[in-house]
Length: 144
Image (cartoon, rainbow, N blue to C red; front, side):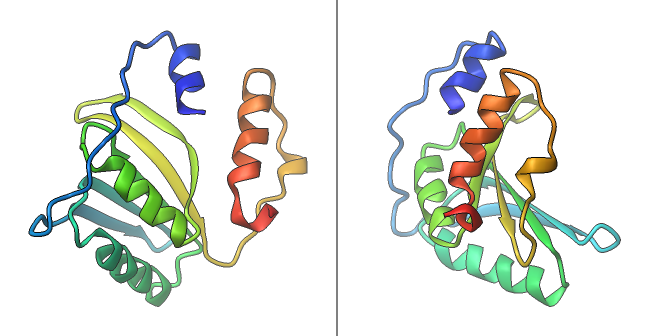
């Protein structure tokens, strides 16, 4: 899916295999919460071996703050990005696309819906976004 998005935007990117973080590596990330929108945003600049535990801590904070949705942005320049992606999937985060060409590089975007379910039928799109939305729907844990 990410390859298709990059191709549709006319960008040239090479996605490496990635590596597992070293045992002593620490996660570098930033969490921000918008109380009014009930939205949490977690930017992961570098995933360390502690990422699964750090993600659990972030999720606990988001629940305590009564967020309805969490967005996670994983820096694709990080060699451990695939490790972070796989760990996030275990906690029901699902891929929603990429945020390309920021000042810090490209980010994989993921979401976690804490109690809400997306009604995909009311979302109106045109191609190629209809195909992309259908793919995102297949990744949503609430749609399985």
